[in-house]
Amino acid sequence: MASIYDEFAAIAADPHTDWDTLHWIAEKYPELRPAVAENPATYPELLDALRAIGDPEIDSALARRHSQPRTPVPPETAASSGGPARSAKEGSSSWWIATPEEAAPPLPVETTSDAEEEWFGSGSSDSDSFTAPTPAPGTTVPPSTGPARRRRPSTSRLLLAVALPLVALVAVAALVLNLWTGSDAAGDSSADTSAVEAAPPDAESGQSATEESELGESEPDAVSTDEAETPPTEDELRDAVAALPEESSCEAAEEDRAALTAFGATAGEDAAWSDPADASLVEETLLALQESCGSSHAARIYLDLQGSAEDVPAALRATVESMGPAWIRTGFPAQGQLLESFAAPGGNVVCELGDALRCTVLEHSFSAPEGCTGGVTYAIEVDRAAEPACGDPVDPAGQPELGYGQTASNEFFACSSFQSQMSCWNQLTGEGINLSASRNATY
Image 1 (tube, rainbow, N blue to C red):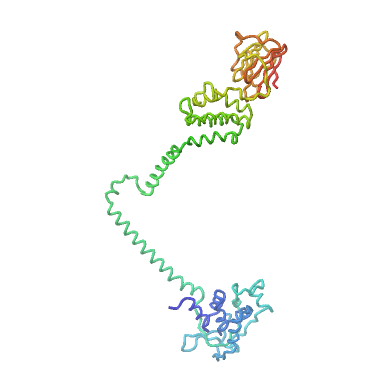
Image 2 (image 1 turned 180 degrees about the vertical axis):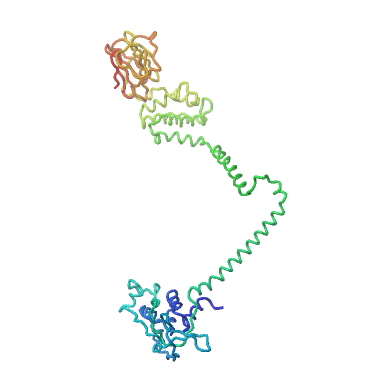
């Protein structure tokens, strides 16, 4: 069975092929251009365009074309439309081309000296981008001499001839598939009639019910996945504590405290560590945090991991308390009396030293901060400067007197009494406040 390509080759060589088809073949099938060039039915403009390509095979075909003997053509009259006059030969269905002498006088056809530039636009001679012209409307083109020719179907008819069988084949296949699918669906429906009848009235779409079921089941799965998240192991928590000195932001002591607490809750058993080496790890971590983040940061963690904090595991609290505060460096130390609370001579300024420093001025002439009535209280913490704390005043009753020129202190804070003021400061940072009845000033 001949292929479509073979049919196009035969059409290209057939002297009865019409101009449109020859033009289309020359444009779409470069390898058939020699056959088009040799075909005696090819019109002159197309021959000029083929000649301008400069292909040796096309040139040989053109040479063979001129060497072919001319066949006499019966005289006919020119048609009223442009192009060679054509009429039916008596007793035959073939169409004949009138001779130039008996056809209507042709209109002149303008050509340029460079045919290649005319047909290829920018002057390119690329054979793959061939575009030959068709005769201009209303223009009579002198016919080439040669055998009589019969008009072939146009390009659109050739394409329809190829496409229609394919469309029909696809339609038949779709019909067969539809019938086969419908048959299976009918069989399933008849086999499950009782289930359909038992379905509730609002179950109109099985697909919708399936989608709702899938959506309903997906949410518990997502929740269960979050709930089932595996907690960090003891080794992972131990590694996190060891990495704190290098990875801490040094801006949030509570984050470092949380890492130590989580480790203590996993690695500690009652008041002892499951591995005795973990106590040394905690101590080394606190010392290293002081080196990397400063004494105020380390002191804040130290104070938060002892005392009455309920969330601190017993093993961790015991380790921190055993360290004591002596390892915390003080940049502005004071040698003073170890007093927890005291009052200035006259009792107008009373102070208390503990995990924080608090002092209350009972009577004053300066403007009190907002929210302070019946005295003004200020507080200093190991990692915070002096600020109002009127909600937690110092009780003045029964306080020992700190005479002028005397100093009281604990591990983190100190106060010195002067005739003009009470001066208190943070021994770790040196930040403090001066208090008297007439003024207060921070430094």
